[in-house]
Image (tube, rainbow, N blue to C red; front, side, top):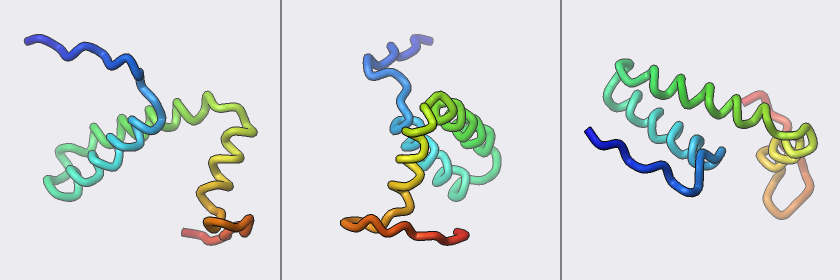
Length: 78
């Protein structure tokens, strides 16, 4: 069986995150048999994020918890 050639874009956080979202859908819709794929993607995302410098990680975290158009940080447990 012929394998697809790797993309010139490489493995990026965005691509892994997109695949993770899709795999979560597959697990929810078709069952736990697909969970290992989702778990692998979660680990890959952790590896990619661990390679970021601390300032970039801090910016990503703050961006995810900042109200659009403001500098207000949303502090919530969930």
